[in-house]
Length: 239
Image (cartoon, rainbow, N blue to C red):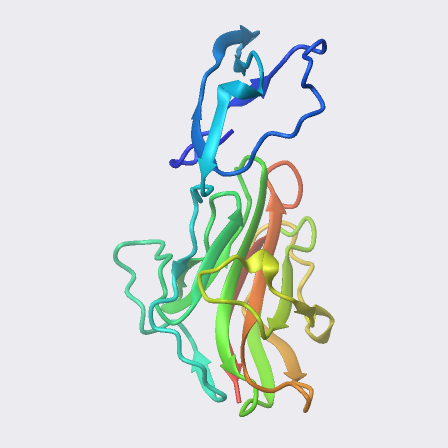
């Protein structure tokens, strides 16, 4: 279980529990349980499903950020130079949506050699991470997409790129139909130690049948005990 602050706790029951095959309800509310401890792990035991009173909407401990100034354009260049470096590790970009779907890590603004970019990695993390950076696009007016990419301490592929035409800004991104266009770009698989340099990933031409407003989605997927590759993005350009 997870509370509104993102804290988690283990809920258990006996193998002889009469309702053991029942799924826990979704949403939020209150729960009555007996506190127990197994070795160093605290765990909560329920007597039956009547102890669970979840009738409200589920709380998102890591809600989408930004998205307050969405503008759909068919020609733009985002180099992140307009964003402040103080406070550090900026995560809110009004023109875009920064959505930590799984885990609690967002795309953050970084600076190196007087150049600003966004970065995300799973190093020193716990559990899985899936985070989206959603960029609004007028696909009727747009022809191509290009961006610069760099990786650090590569130990597996962490970046995918999609487009979608049915994502609602700040809404449930899992309900969006995502078209994977990652293969159109060259995503580095080195270096395994240290960082490379930001370089053009290539150019993708949108299908002529793709029209209307939508989003480009940059998806980071990692795990503190698996793929921890750091990904950097810059100069996102649609024209």
